[in-house]
Length: 258
Image 1 (spheres, one colour):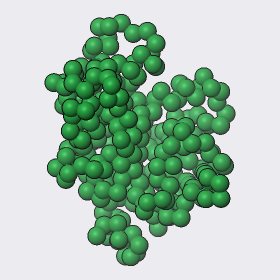
Image 2 (tube, one colour):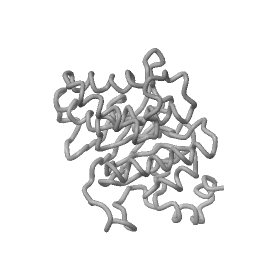
Image 3 (cartoon, one colour):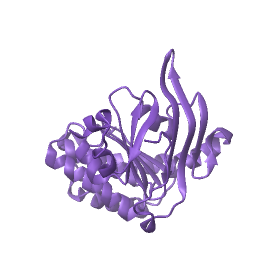
Image 4 (tube, one colour):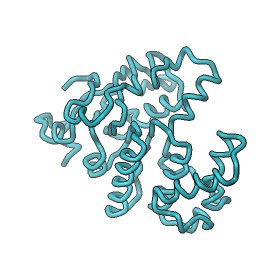
């Protein structure tokens, strides 16, 4: 299998082939621990890219580099046609507003109501926004994830699956072009996990988002992936469709699908 990502082949007729994220020879270390050794990948417009790999292989570090939570040691990161290393702080903020990050925990504020959790990113990013527009965006975001009736509840009153959906609503409210999902189904029962996976597909269809989905959940990968990359030893060691990888004769790759 190739170690470098290539554009979608199977369903390009349904998608714009524009590359929205490109990582070229990306490296990242923490002290003497080199986590990303030589990452080369692309994400196409409207594509769901799933990244698999054992714990500690750098999956979460990879998407933290994209959103700017971790800084590259070496290599090139291009987002929406912009070389990130060449941008000033103002230009970086413009790019980062176009990226939504759904944290594994949901990163919700339990001291706030559902409404207030959704108001927070709007007030932070848009500074001033008419109340009518804010109410409309909040209503739309909650309806998108099936939580319209929870608007006055606190996150502590919601189930694990509902909290995941609320975290997604809070991310979607700013209409990001790129979505980063960090273990979106972790800790959920199989039925709720399937609901979250289906919701990821609905978001992709409605907003034409380009997404990276980090997961250990092979069923989530099967449902959501247009393409899968498997990380090993800090590189993209295998790539293909779900079917391609599931039918691989490589025992190491097969282990992910057992």
